[in-house]
Length: 373
Image (cartoon, rainbow, N blue to C red; front, side, top):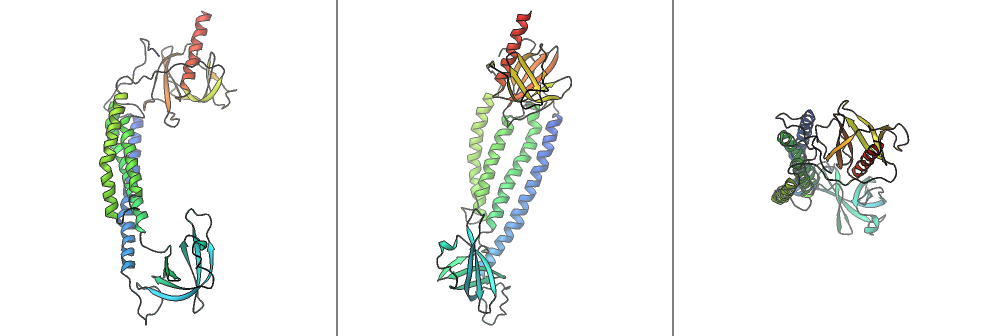
């Protein structure tokens, strides 16, 4: 779309971030710091505690024959029992079932095993088993000479804490980086969705996803950290290529060329019309049709319509700015149409797929003005 001589220009760049950018920086810094603190707790406290319990369990030996048998010691206490019944647990993604056992003194205990009773035909009522306690809980059951570890098995429990800690740590670092970098980006670009922010965020989310799964295929926290560290150069290389491509695409004037689409009938879709005079958005929905463009709060577009001034002149289509009086994201796919109405700046904001209809409606309004003259 051609730009007339009086086209509106990008707001002047200043050395001080826009108030909205400063608010976003503070929010990112606070949220990132909370994520990093939570990650530190998970890695330094929860993961370490789970590892200590796993090491203690692996090092445990059988209890002495003359032990008190209370099951609360660090030794392994094995007793004979029989299966009373099994119950399958429903409503879980990972199948598991309850196993009820009765010891010689008539005491009944319950534990949980992965899978289902049908997967282990020997786990039937009346069958003899040996259950092993450690620190007061059943850790494994020997059924027909086959050892089945219960869900109380502490081996590998550290992995969930380590995965959450790595993911949160990287995720929080991304927000801290965005807050730091935004103090510089805001001087160079007023775009809401600039590549200087989008590329690092995408790379950071990729690393966070790797950190979330790294502990499971590895056998120690150190190996999980090494896996994440080895992934860093790969992610940096991919992000560097993406940054070069996006930098070239976003260089220079950010005017977006769109072909107007003249609507054959009135259509209603989400959108806002913002006047520089009031700095407030009207509507929430736009109605675009042959010779008409209006804002409304009615999703059907049938009532409460406020038609734009006949003198509204489109200037250019561009991405949304932090400095815009009102922002509407529309899933990160919004566009802004800069217009002018008797020297007053007017912005039309809507999803990019609807912007051609807005241009078409304004185009038909311009033709009608010429006919009337």
